[in-house]
Image (cartoon, rainbow, N blue to C red):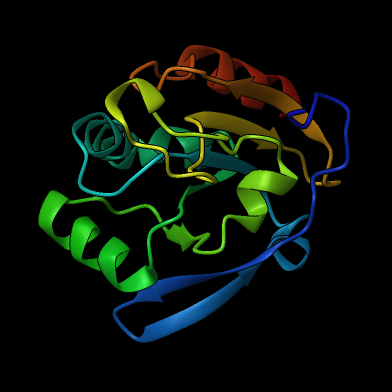
Length: 164
């Protein structure tokens, strides 16, 4: 079951590959600095994931104005994420959930990813959006069952606005 509004956000430590090298991002260490938006996406280099994160990258200023830091999370390794970001112009931090532990903790891991296309990879993250306030409480949660369906970003921004 996915994490619900009002739940304490599960803590995690994930790797983000930056120009300076790999860095660890621990949720509990950044909680309190700003509100946090977590965007789980199924896979790097896929059309919908690329478009979503490029669109968010282009509008990062809107999220910053709402006192929010946005992170993309996928099960890809950090080196693939770095190549994807460079190739596609993605500028938000990407976090590698290579072991799929965070997708499972948030309740957004597919048992089987697109079995109708014989893609039976378990643990792939469902496209999801979570807003976490400065106290570490989930204030918005949306999980899409179909990988092509995007979260309601107007609702994400409205939630952030309500936290101001």
